Image (cartoon, rainbow, N blue to C red; front, side):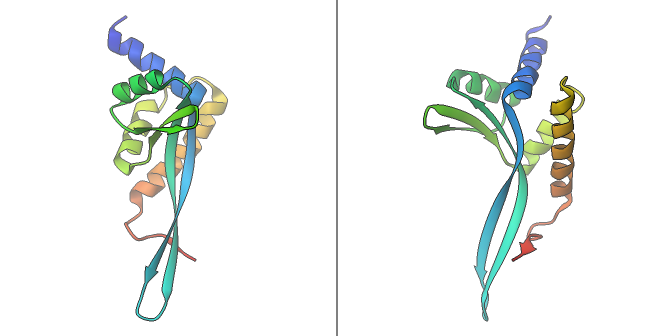
Length: 126
């Protein structure tokens, strides 16, 4: 087995066990001439969580994306950028083994693809 095949198998397993396919809600307030306008955007996000920062550093190196952040004794690799999420979708599509995780991924993938087609500024007016 080649090193890249091992790395890709390892990262898929790590994502399957410790990854979170989720979404972020972003609220933005803009000032117009007459009033304040409030918008809400719901964007997909991905997090990979571990107490071992070196595992996340290896994952970031293999994937070539994301930022590592610390929250107390836990670290997480977060991926939020649209182009990175699209690359992650392409990378993971068809590779997850667990049926429950595959179903989560498929729902999240649809959210990413809808987000891809959304224009800038297309948030919900609240």
